[in-house]
Length: 305
Image (cartoon, rainbow, N blue to C red):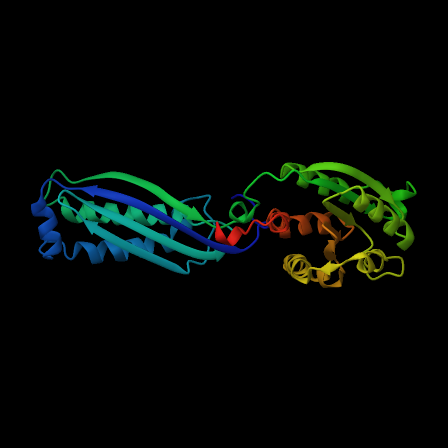
């Protein structure tokens, strides 16, 4: 199965449709009057659909077992067909479109099985996804953002040449995959004055986003938070909490990190862990949804769209 351990948990919704065509209105009338020999077609097929949604991962090899938190099955009986609509919801890391389509398919197949003794022309016309919602794509910036982004590696060992930078490079790689342009990249010692000087110079150069990696731990040499916090005009505790919460689900040591996020003027500063995994997970935790901040600065309200 596809690895979804890096994904964030969000509300996911999917709506699927299936259409069962019948030979005549007599079949529809038999369904509505509950006179089909095999039983109540709508209720039996609804029950089958509920079981199908919950058991999708048992029959579709690459589907993950997920907590199904709502399934709604709606029927619309027309003169020559029955429209089936299945809505599935979950709060999880992956979507439920296959679950919704599987449910709709089984509802349709159950109807077919129950109706074929009285209607030789019954057929399943279509099964399709109507729409889905949830996941990172729905919380990303809705328009292309032409941002100047800088990555600053704060590490004594990397700046002295004793170690190669990997955390900074993984941040750059992930940001570029999101379509962001990296205007500046630098490696400096983890020293308060040096960090502040570099951040101030990039801020004055109208850099929109500065991501620092390293120096957020609890050793005596880790001073990045001490350098960054005095520079902030507005600290964003919610992003810091999201980063630590995401990390804590993956390692118990995430609670020891002192990631700091906030605005200096209109420049967003993000001080992330210096380990490669910690840096990568921090980006996964809050991007691309964090880019919505820049739309807020420009007067765009995502919630009203």
